[in-house]
Length: 378
Ligand code: SOE
Image 1 (tube, helix red, strand yellow):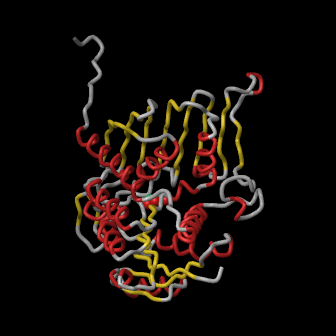
Image 2 (cartoon, helix red, strand yellow):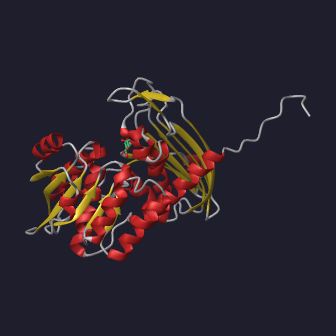
Image 3 (cartoon, protein in one colour):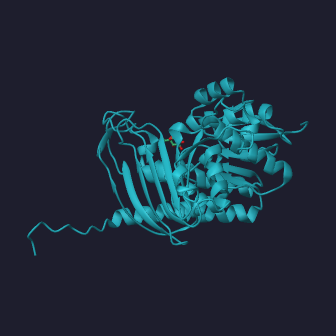
């Protein structure tokens, strides 16, 4: 690997760290056609961005993302700033002929996502959305098993994404709880992940019905003063798939005791798969075509060389974790760029996800309930 490729990143907090770490690790673990060069990082708070740049090895720190767009040396623009910034940055980046990698949710809503996906298509540049859970080896393996026909026709997809970090009413208003900045609450933040996984594993969703709740109506602003909360703390929905399957989804930040519990199960005519992110090296698999007397759920440890991505990391038994999912995606991106091949998930996948999220928001706002009759009532 002789040549490098310059990256400009906008945003420097949680996802900024996850992506910086990924770019720094992958040249050592993967045989890549190009070496990621951490050229410029941008954020509004200059001292904080400078500190981040120093710590993670970025060459430059700037406080205006347009400097990244205007730099002809930068080929990849990585967007990990808050949701309300994605649209303008991505469109400017495509117009400047950059490759774009954007954090999820791709946009504030479907209308923004339509424009972003159109700009991506028009530019012809490689693009991707950081739905990093597709790169959990056990999830990529689940897709492989489904693709091999091992569970047959799918009947059900069932996903929970449970956290509890906003349950305490004294947690102040952070950007993820601010409607103007985040667009939505758990819908954009957590459902986006599991809807993308369902698109990846089962196929397109045709219709949804759901409900959502705001459990804490007011929070302290970090700068002082109260803010009315307008984003949903929890949301559940059911759906119908184009292929005839049905699904249900729950996302919440109020599941006391659950930190990052992202689980799903897919049930098909020949078997099922089950995954839990808090035990992410495992995929559970049930095969009903096995003789009855030896049937049972098989716990497969997804860490053999034959499993997706695992050859690149440690030996079997030495598990990998959350950070490696970003490494796997960053490596796929650099390989796609080196080979001039498209990358998945792309902005069209981001759009497909966003349109489901819009439908979920609309369904939850409509909130149609059928009352249960009281015993003896007419
Ligand atoms: C929310 O708490 C969050 O940080 C998401 O925004 C991330 O996408 C997820 O990977 C972990 O949880």
